[in-house]
Image (tube, rainbow, N blue to C red; front, top):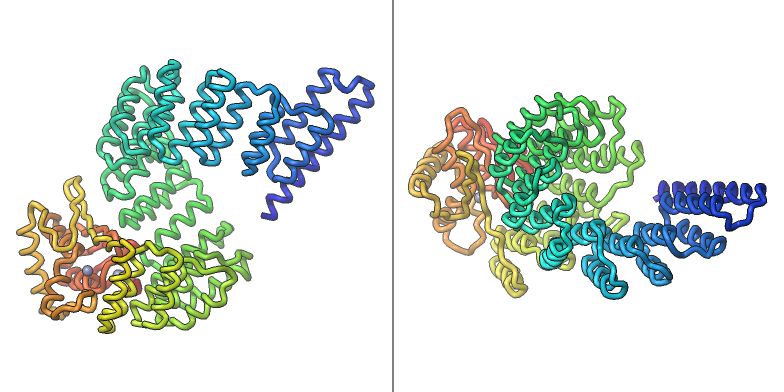
Length: 615
Ligand code: ZN
Ligand code: ZN
């Protein structure tokens, strides 16, 4: 905030100075004020001041000066001022000035339309567009269409985008590569891959930008293999990929878990030197971390030539999410030693790393250092991390006191962290308060109802649990079904609880039964408190044994080689019973099992989990 003000006042001072010089020059040379060349230089001074303007106050001051000295509302200055007001989010002023402009040309309309576009107002864009066509019978140019398409893309508004597509076709503007690429992006973002592909194929002599657009469309829509195929075609067409190509390829994998393709991209980046680009290398590092491959993330970090704060923070985040608290702390200290100044994002990951590893004292110290040593005031994210850290360690009343002392209103992240801890430690009273706050903040999040109902069920308070579930039903909310994913043979295999849809279903259940038998002998006992219904113990065991993680583990053991770790993704938090089961399986079957749940990674090996049972 302080930075913006000082910048803009500086801009204003520069402007005043230049304005003064300009006037002095005018008076010294005794030229009449309206002399063209001097007016021109005055105009450029104004434009320079407007374009560098970054606060409402200075834009108004400039506007006032312009009106006073030139009475100049039209032409280029007017357009620039409209853009400037939009940039600062002052739409009323922008609209007012626009309406006052006596001679509006295409550039003026474009300033208005692109201003709406940048502020995400698709419909105002279209209204202005239609006004322009009907009031002034003016034809749009590519800039006009690009502004509207970009707004439609950002807001995922397809019908209006199609309307603009039609107009582009009518005006013969589909030979304009920028317009076509923007339309490809629009269709891709809205999930219409075939339409995007049709547009791409119709382009004669596809450019790098078009290839990047179409690859991104496939990747974003979950067609990673097709995206990769296009990438190879592009190289065969002797088009040299760039940073945008790599980012397009990397973004798609996040939800897919296709590790082999990530390796291909990595290899390619090394060969063509793109690894030196810090933005894409950081994207690759984060991707490997999301795929459960912390060592590959580390490798990318070591290969990186230009390390910036973002890269350091991404690596720290990888340690945090993989539950490597000690390594995260060492890494943070190294970062500071190398004179990389941490910011609030760095601290969020550092505190979460402490939380994921139960490092309470270290977390408390860093929370203090953050403001006292580094001058960073804690934000909501940091409070969530601290509540989580204290709560996981059973320090529920400390967590509650911290919330009470917060200088801002706690959000759902903060209360959610407390509720999660109450679930683990069976604190009904605080749990109820946290849940009530969450119901008020976000009544439509079914996870909070389930969490509270779980707290009651675990304590045997069936009536209360039923009441929460009834409330959830009354509000039309349903439980998000738990799903586990595992990649095998370039295919993602998906399991839900009690799933029988898999082709190998029979074998999977047989393997699972065998496994549970084996680990029981080794001391595994079902934790039936994780079943939420008021039913007999035996029935509960039967239900819990069909959880999606267990099915994915059994399938993984059936199909993968003995030396391979099992990498499983779960959409919700892993339950205590599956967590315990995975620990036993890692011991009995001598397998590393990596489960990424909605919160973090669990690395199971030799009967232990990397989370140290803090999750
Ligand atoms: Zn489970
Ligand atoms: Zn774990």
